[in-house]
Image (cartoon, rainbow, N blue to C red; front, side, top):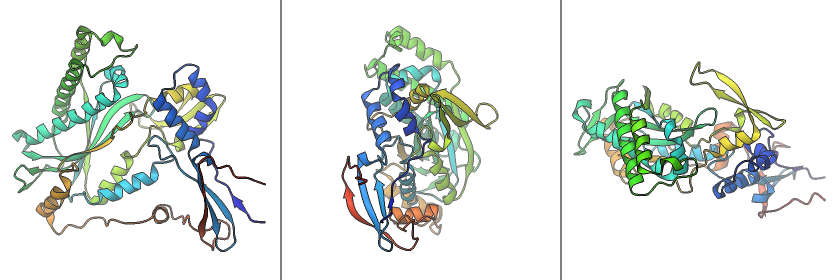
Length: 398
């Protein structure tokens, strides 16, 4: 009798929490259209509902059912391959210099406004950070007087899944002169004064946010209705203007491979990965988190399932919002000409990680050591696709 290998779904995953408790969530909260799509995708990911294929071993005849992934950017199961493919593309852009990692964080006082205006507020965040960094690079006191290039990645969560809006920026340590005839290297241990950077970021973000308000680009929900009047909105602006905003710079690191490894930690991430979920029991979810406010130790948190879902859905991004963006000489319109020029200006003999053109199966073999084309039963044959499974296909076990 031919052996059939069916896909297995792990029990400890976000999809399982949604499957068992989305009804509990809907008793308290509305499920907005953008949430419905994500919930549907996560529930159907790697199931018969999304279709797939049947493979047969060319040696022992074993059949294997493989279902398609949902490829939703919020799905914890669908980020590994996109991340690796994205990192491969970045090999063409790495420079032989140190890199700085700078994080810009928005104060939680603005969270209600941001949650009601995600697309506008996040676009303002990217713009304010770019304006701030380029203004500092232009200022003679920082001894660069050129244009920076950097990659920025939006994150919206804390380790405990609450709304925590911040932008990670990876910045090569130097600037391209405005005449494009020199690479001006930054200090290896210092880019800009971080407290000054935070103050400038605060000023520019609030100016852009106020401009959006005056141009009627902001909407106000029931929770933010109090800020709809010009007087109350200005009071909010004045209040957060007096507060200390947080910008944080990590120690620079060198080497192209280090840069790629570091980038991989921040791109194509979702609010929580499935491997952080420890237990789903009696309507409660227990997961791990890193306590960044105190000792940085790994701790456990338990939430009611409907609260876990509420926090998870807080981090759904608006349709069409680009969460990884490139600025300065790394912008898409500039990098094809500027990167080869900068590499030549810095060190024309420098070597970089070799770009690999490979299939998904080759990538899996390189990253995990697992040959997904090899028969898992006889270990000798290759799995060959013999049939495509349409969407909503259900295997007839008879």
